[in-house]
Image (cartoon, rainbow, N blue to C red):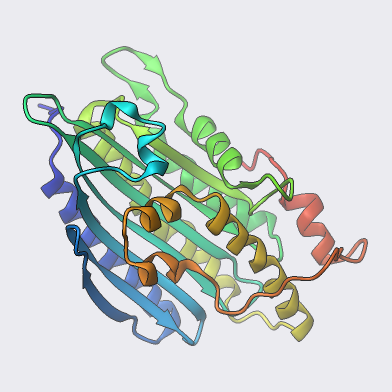
Length: 311
């Protein structure tokens, strides 16, 4: 029998286990252990940041768990959700960004999260959100198709609403949401090759919505680790490293200008070091630079940084 009553305890238990499993899988690929930094937040809550820097494979990366609470929402959240005014809130999630040193190995981002807001005498308002997206520097159709197929398969069990007998087709919706969200409007280009993204999701009831979030989180290892293992030791040149640093600039621009999680964290008094551990360690910007026509760098723009059906 399913329940529509949200259980923050069950969500927190899953998220902590997910963080541990992902770190173990990434440590196996790198060969160097992640550091552990536990922290507390004066306004309420805390978290655990698992970080690696100057590893054998990862130049920098972090897998963070956070569980924070508050009495009033920051402007970035309350302006769009007036029904949350006056409610106490609780947010928890696992968020990761990994930046491999090898430019043939793509950067990866994943986030899964749960939010609930309560007020005495009223029903709680809650939802899940998250997704995962891939940012290559040198495109591979095989890798991109594998990544998108894994994302699609994670959502497939939830496509049919058995109670209403309707087809929800979640992957096409969540893929488009990802394409639209991870888009640099000022550059008029996608950040990467996309994946899936969803937010404010509670339409299946708590148990099924939670199961969907779990499936997305569990998809990270099979979606990314094979791509990383395949590419982490491919020979590369300094010119390719230089292009990687240039493209990483787009990552920084998106996170600081558009990313809702970054804005929410900073505006709600979150821990700055943990929020900004997603930033790449080496980044370059150039004035009005364009890749040489017909080059692998140009192919990234023409063949991969486009909205495309990969499955």
